Amino acid sequence: MILSTAIRAWLFDFDGTLVEPSIDFDAMRRAVLEIVARYGLDPEPLARMYTLELIERVEAQLIRRGDGLARAFVREAEEAIVAIEIEAARNVSAYEGAPDMLLRLMALGYRVGIVTRNCRAAVEQVMARNDLRCDVLLTRDDVAQVKPDPRHLLAALAALDVLPQQAAMCGDHPMDIAAGRAIGATLTVGVLRPGVASDYFAEAQPDLVLSRVVDLLDHLPAKQ
Image (tube, rainbow, N blue to C red):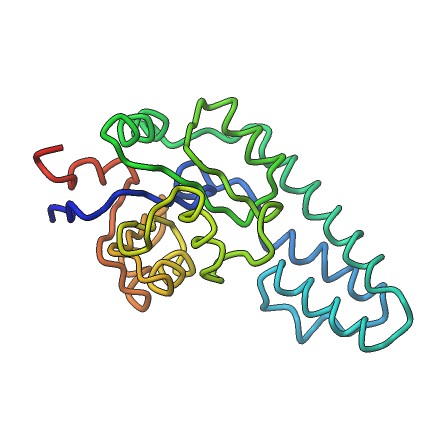
């Protein structure tokens, strides 16, 4: 598959796409659910939620409860997940060829952005150690709404001065594909993490599925 010459920018997820998966999201969720229980709420109905959305849900419940504990809960929960992210980032390596791929894309004139739900401190630590470069990095600390909310991607494209129909979104999770479709990206690319089944993206249906993120270089227009 040769990609469209209309693409001017590439947006990438980070963890599991450009770098090895590093965060135990189940452990992160459990840590936050333990905090939820200490604030007198039943954690069971929240057990299947993504952690960031879980925190937002509990914050809203505590605000409605009206005992003034919502802010304290959010602070405690955020401190817990940041600690896990920072610890996980200490030994993370970029996937083979990923740093050179980003440089290659920029050398070819593409704009490159990274959009991640991770915290900035952890991401910057990994990027510096692995020499990962981009034109724009937007973590959850930089935006009010994180993906799959399309406004996360739109903020990155605004910073890159690129229209959605001129962009491609690349990630290892169905939410990356959903976010790309929501903004009207001209291309969505699913990357299969090692050990993930080949039909992992069957429901999300990205335009292109790759076993390695660096393989997208093989699909660039020949004139590039």
